[in-house]
Amino acid sequence: MDFLMATQGGNPMMQFLPLMVIMFAVMYFLIIRPQKQKEKKRQEMITNVRKQDRIITAGGVHGVVVSVKDSEVVVRVDDAKDVKIKIDKSALTSVSAPRDAKDDE
Image 1 (tube, one colour):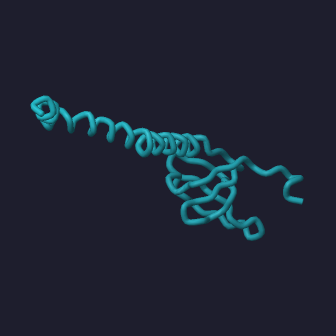
Image 2 (cartoon, one colour; image 1 turned 180 degrees about the vertical axis):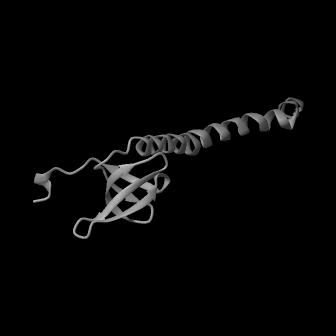
Image 3 (cartoon, rainbow, N blue to C red; image 1 turned 180 degrees about the horizontal axis):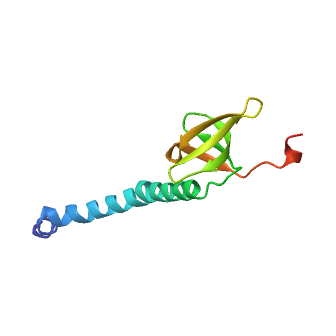
């Protein structure tokens, strides 16, 4: 019985510390790391936006990029009336390559 008491005793902090390390590691690999990778991919997409790319904004605006500046893009949203708007680059959620003429048919 004395042996059992000896194994259960000891510093409670030494039992708690490995558990905290394991919990942090799990949180890092399941939450923090994927979020950082997603943000890095989004920043790369925003940096590489070019003229004639098709975009979608966080507000749901669809359009074609007419010009690109440091922190904003000018987007044509209506071809028939030649409607253009300025959009902050941080509002972009999706960027795709321009469509070919044969795709429009």
